[in-house]
Length: 209
Ligand SMILES: Nc1ncnc2c1ncn2[C@@H]1O[C@H](COP(=O)(O)OP(=O)(O)OP(=O)(O)O)[C@@H](O)[C@H]1O
Ligand SMILES: [Mg+2]
Image (cartoon, rainbow, N blue to C red; front, side, top):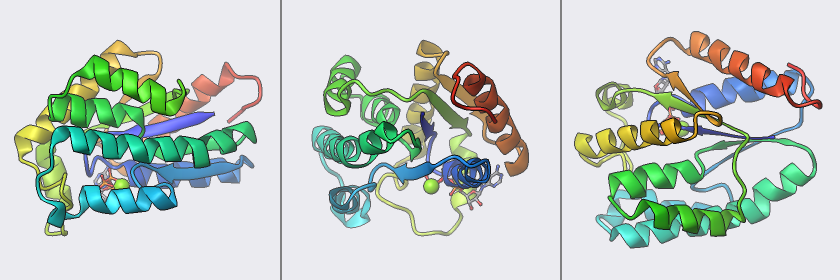
């Protein structure tokens, strides 16, 4: 079972993942919690290049291929081995993020990115995706005076394009991508996620929540 969480920065991904991972572990499931970028040793190095503000502006294509390199390593070293052992893998971002950020945000060719995603993931797609949807204005309020990374430092219009990109993607894949209003309170959002997941898992014999 492969689950990814998506959404713009500060949409609440880490908060919700951590609650869900605790819950699933309590239920006795073996869970691997991971993330992109940075889920592997190489990925951590790539993440630093991508997110440090000192990298400044880089070409959209360079950015795209750095994320894809991170993903290739992540699939091969972390996600596939864990799935082969029957574990539940929960990733903070996956291939959808590249469509939203580099496709919609940087305006690179989306069918091309989809093709590249397929290549680097060997066709691996999540079973279910939780898209936490919040407005970029709220995201900015949530981040407060914290130091921002290179992508968070982008203009609000960039984050708006990314948000809309994610919503378009959800419309194209309604079976897989579940849009969750991320502006509500943490506990209610978590309950919604658990309900959707339980419904989804009922269809799969090996899982009961
Ligand atoms: N539903 C919520 N209501 C209010 N505040 C929230 C909610 N969810 C998360 N927060 C707060 O907003 C901030 C960002 O949340 P979190 O780190 O979970 O988001 P994120 O999507 O993982 O962000 P990033 O993209 O930076 O990793 C944190 O301070 C968190 O406590
Ligand atoms: Mg986070």
